[in-house]
Image (cartoon, rainbow, N blue to C red; front, side, top):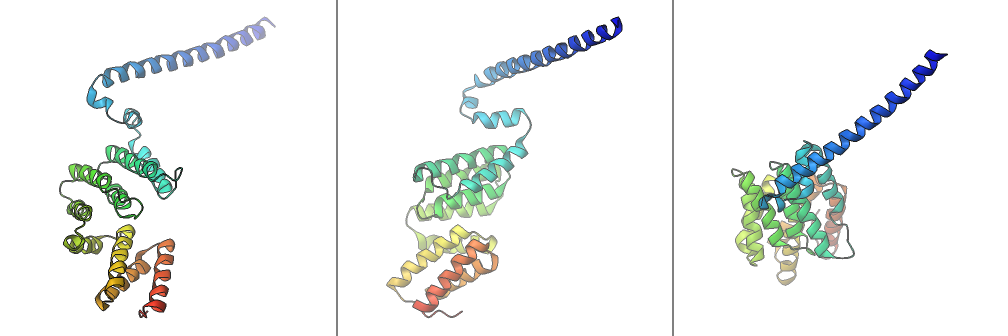
Length: 238
């Protein structure tokens, strides 16, 4: 009987002793992290960085964090925030910069984020897009495509479409960019209304067919709708 009682007491004390040890561990760990953060954040350059990115690096979860941020970016694109373009674009921009810091060689981040900010008609945030691309060039100095995007955005910002049209076509020969293609089609459409040129119509048709070939289901719906519109209104051939 005594042994049984003694065993119960031992188990009781062991259980609570372990709980105390675990609590002390978390307290000490928290103090360590706080002290470490204070040391690091004394440096002004670190203060200017994203706090959450800093934590991702400390805990060695950069790849996982990049994946989660990229999913977040994909979900937030086109999602209205209180009908505020400023809030929408700021979120896209800030998330892109976080991803760049965590995974500087992840090129899709620079291509897609800058394209969305620059070429979606209701955004047209050329400065934000350029800033993302400059960050990309800093990390990927040999990448010519990033430089071409910078040239295009610089030209469009200065209303010099004709000077960068060739570069746009070079980009689209290298990668499928739905936002840039839609932007290009919109420019050709506006010009076609002023000048019913067969050359402009053939350019529109060419890029709609590219969407049909490479686009996702949503992109293809857009292309089919446009082709039907041009077939009925402008007699474009299938």
